[in-house]
Image 1 (cartoon, rainbow, N blue to C red):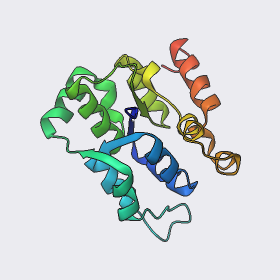
Image 2 (cartoon, one colour; image 1 turned 180 degrees about the horizontal axis):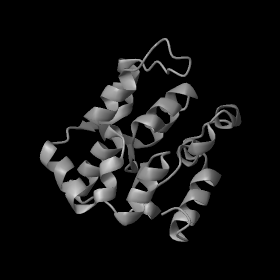
Image 3 (cartoon, rainbow, N blue to C red; image 1 turned 90 degrees about the horizontal axis):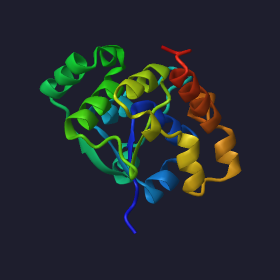
Image 4 (cartoon, rainbow, N blue to C red; image 1 turned 30 degrees about the horizontal axis):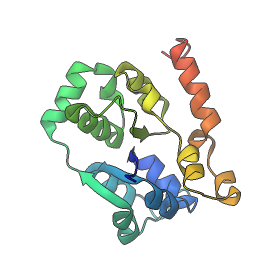
Length: 173
């Protein structure tokens, strides 16, 4: 059976490593990301207490693809959807590539982010229903309760559901 394609942003990758979920989700799903997200995942300030160390070999072993994004793809996304201009670089690259390749909306491809602005942008692109939480992915991949319980709030299904509802109701513009 073919694995479900999952497009992950930097924050989701970092949280999956922080909580020990990476191996399970990358074994269960076909995880793809952008070169910019890989770069962001592997850098940062090691002196920062929130810094998550991501072993490059483990990250690369868990990815089925890391896609380059051109300046033209970035410009096209922002020109067509100005709200995407304020996204963090990794999310902007992810959305630009997905938009250029016209993969969403889809019943068999999902994307994951834990950023409200990215979720608002996803709604504007018609992709809100394609967004899933790290918790949902981890649960489907068989991750145990100990790891699920340490997920930060914005990676949980109830947080995502609440944000999606507020976006649909216009509470979050």
